Image (cartoon, rainbow, N blue to C red):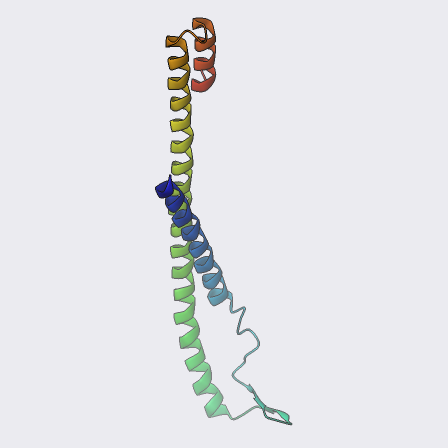
Length: 141
């Protein structure tokens, strides 16, 4: 019983980790966290002042813009990779969780069938009652 709970917990944690990777990838691809930055506007925060410097200089802006494009392309590639890892992780652990739940359900059905068979053998229930419960448990119509 503890191993099933552990497997279910690991699967749920795996799904959560996958979701985190997907969110991180979306953030990196679309620049949600750093969308306010531009290479021509720098803001300096001090104790009592706030200044904004515009149009720093053509050479500096060009160099920073090139570096920004390089960083964006690297981050964008990692964002797609992160989303792929996240989705793969979610699919794997969700399938694992479904398998655990279905296995638990099938074990319970067969355990119940065995219990009804024991009741039939000890003459507590009739053959008809046993057959009816068997059809219900095995989903036979």
